[in-house]
Amino acid sequence: MTLIEHLRELRSRLFKAVAAIVVTAIACGFFYYEIFEFLQRPFEGVVSELAAEEGLEAELTLNGVADPLTLALKVSLVSGIVLSSPIWLWQVWAFIVPGLHANERRKSMIFAVIAGPLFMTGVALGYYVLPKGLEILLNFTPADVANLVEVGRYLSFILRMLLVFGIAFEIPLFVIMLNLAGVVSGKQLGEARPWIIIATFVFAAVATPSTDPVSMLFLALPMTGLFILSEVIARLLDRRRGVGAEGDYNAYDDDETSDLALEDHDETASDLDDDDDWDDDRDDDSDDLDDPPR
Image 1 (tube, rainbow, N blue to C red):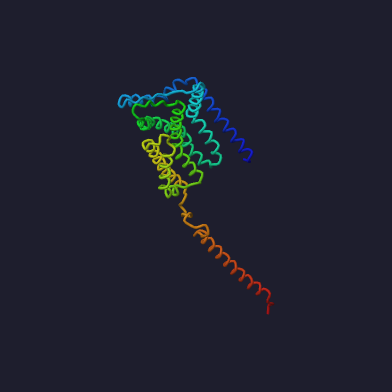
Image 2: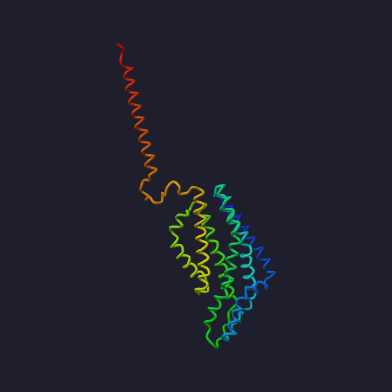
């Protein structure tokens, strides 16, 4: 494909992904109140529990005339992004697939199928962890102080939490896709494992909006387990494809000659020596022909 054809393909995939999100968001708009009640449930549960134990007063508020409309649009849009994730994730995958070989497409089709459910699993885990983070944060409210939480900020908090968990669960899948494309090997993942685990915990600490250790651990530990699983799968794929069976050429420096190149050089030199011997024999034969018979 030419560059223009690649751009047209990208435009087509983006259009289909955006259309799926918009259509799903419009459908979610008809169930706005049910969705908002679902998102409000963790906050109400935590507040009622803290009110019974410590007398905490907290409630969600709207501070502007246009805030209810903005809230409805935001809830519908994010719900559309989450529920249409299998479709737009498939569009991303369909744009990458032409760059793979036929056997790689068949093997990686399994991972393309589980991309959507994996994203939804991350969102579900984020929803489960959300009350624990809210409880820790709201518990810092001083006594005799009412905590009036703006709905827009609460919604941004919860939606960021859900999206972070959903996207984080897709990272191991992209690692396997990079392995199938030949960008990274299972051995390289194993060598970088300690640094990747540290980076995972740092990412979890920065990405989770609640900033509490409970939410960080609930995100970092599954991500670490999924990464180790992806490393095992990458090693199995490398073994089946024979990657690394002929030697580890990453151990050589850029200016160092590998053993394979030395063997080729020796064979070439040997062939040249044989050619020289053959030329010498041919010269001797030609000299014999030039001598006149006696």
